[in-house]
Image 1: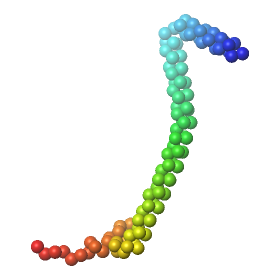
Image 2: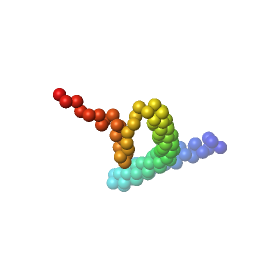
Image 3: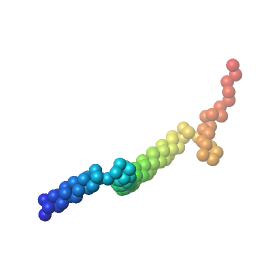
Length: 107
């Protein structure tokens, strides 16, 4: 069964190449361009299928990393609050520690 399939495929390729050689130059160029376009379309479809999985994995990994960073920042903020080393005020998303409000030293 497999040998018959391979033989038939080989025969079809040989006939297609013989017909291609018999074609005029302009028609050969048109057929070559069509085959190249078909090959690039197939390559694009394969890249889309494999890229979808890659993007899905990267998105999941980025979300996990963001959660880790947020958790680490929250734990660090809680640790600093317990030590009471970092007293300050939040103005929107800007943190201003009270240590910046020390009087300036005269020169």
